[in-house]
Length: 234
Image (cartoon, rainbow, N blue to C red; front, top):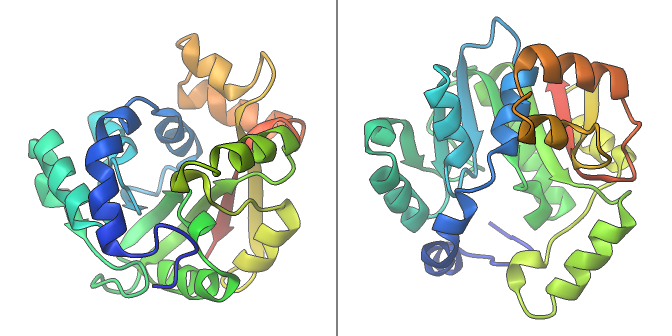
């Protein structure tokens, strides 16, 4: 797996004990997935789950969500953190799943592709599409937010976790065109007062509120959002 940084399983196995507990705190992506999930999407998979926080939160909401990660240490920590979900947590290579075709109605990941080259992203997209029945989601860091890009560049001088790629809307459409011609891209994270994170913080993060909000705002927060949540219909 030719990752751009933290480029092998040993690196992640050494890193996860340092960051696992801290990463449990941010559940925003779980709210986004719940809001954007379609009624016919019953079985979900989180790829590169890492902390497995979002997968666990979706399960707490009664959604059948499984999770995989490349790091054996991340899997071990997650199975200890979420013992009732241990049977849904697995170590797996995102280039070669052991799952059969169309095993999950919806698959998603948050920040996985930011570690890979264009050639590897195509392979990852094709394999994700293979195990997805209806839709797949790839959430990446947003290159249109220049302040966010600059912040990561500064932090990357001392911490390899920040040595990642950022993507534009056009770049993500090009990557996902390998598996779909029906692509929707939603800017998410931070933004101005009425952005979805503000709604979640105020206890207004239900699908009945967030989903219409996403539909109404469109690209309004493109230059202010942290990430691009990219949906490919299969």
